Image (tube, rainbow, N blue to C red):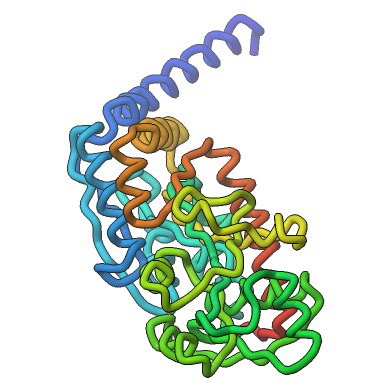
Length: 326
């Protein structure tokens, strides 16, 4: 075959390929042109669900199509997360991803039906939920150094929202770094654990800031330290555990937006742009603050790296706690 003829055939093939791609490219530029499902892997009414509805409202407004929240709860967020992992990668089924389903689940489930890295395309982080160390008002310690002295001098117990919960893993991460031990007393959720903590049956607990803030403001619990890298504007008087001597300690949950793997990059970029734009507005920042979330919009690439690092961090916490995958 002559070189001229070969180039001619290649040119025809290239034209055919471009024509075939044209409708797809147009569809991406026109995205979204029908309603989008936003899957929330927990029950309605919880803080993550409320945040998802706030985000859906903003995206509906900016992109001109309904973003419809659907709750698919169960199995520690894995049911809803797996549903999106297996959805068509067209941008019309999205996930309100959680640190529980992405970072902690690989260490807790031996047969996780999805891979949080391979099966998803990260869009953007949305909000951070700070794990906060709290104790009853009568606890004989008010700061990290007093706590460590008490823990080294006698037995100490802590409550959690259940075996393998974020509060459990955050506490084990803390104990490992602080070099002390405490007896774990698991409960069926934070709502069951808090009365026991307030009553002094256990000495301390790590829990999400939105869950403990009402009791702190009511004077029933005191904050020993927050698990964020910097002080939070939600509770500016509370010192971080890092600034009290636990260098580099950070325990935060997070909620972000993700799509099925192989979703077109143009769609992902468009969603990322709109999330960043929405979270930059004073209105959205105030709404997140009211829910006790810290806004955390970022690039797709940074969010992907963040997820990978979180999987390693929470996986190590599970190993420290000697939690065997079930």
